[in-house]
Length: 316
Image 1 (cartoon, rainbow, N blue to C red):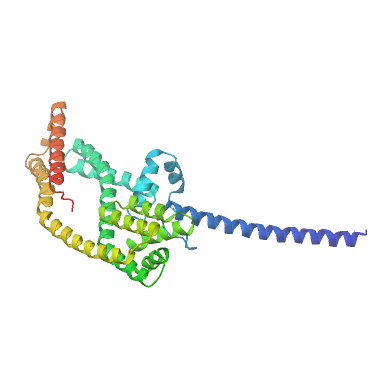
Image 2: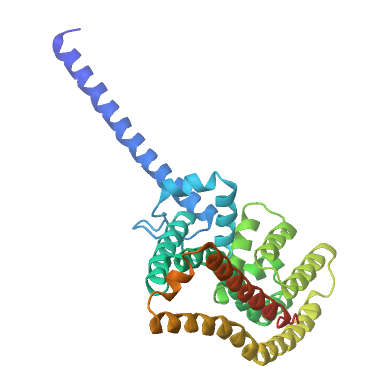
């Protein structure tokens, strides 16, 4: 073989290797993009969107470290059911920044010891905020249940299967019902059973109304029967319960405002005392006895707030 043929052969092999290298890089980039999109979809935390449509967290390293811990896993599950568009790392960073702001703000107005107490209360408040968001989302979903059962009844009466009816309801209803039903449809599409997919929905948004709906759908799907008439009756019942819940909430609104106003007045009095006698709170919290009395006073306020909210909670 002469040098010319050898050179052409070498050039051809090199070009072929470069072609395979380009194909491999493209396949790797596509697979990496699909992997990121799949991870973002399975975590269900809603980090910010990228140009490709996938959602990526702002602090991926912190997210990975948090998910390795039990606290991080619980935090991720709790955020997933609130509908907040943040990842566990973003929520942790925001919480720490908020606690620092609360500490310096309260400490500058009252006393440094009050800043420490406010930071501890803020740590509890972060968890309470997630619970409030979950309850708010659950309440919004419950308010959409009559419309959901009406859509399911119309779809099944038209001869559609229950899985198709759920997909159609996911497209027609607004969030949070539309988003939650899309999750159920996605579970069914990847092979989850009908009962397991609905049970996951009931676990994410715990409520009596949703448990009744899930039980009705599961039994109808398992044993058959008059699912249309059952959904019609359930729609009427849910509308009546919705009106009852609204009336109860209106009647108890004054009690809940009072439960928040009493501790707020106590803090206002402390601020007035400190303004009238500058340095009074610093002197009060400089001793162990004053700090203990302050902690006991705030604990009593907290217990009173908890008892009032417990007594004003009426389950319909």
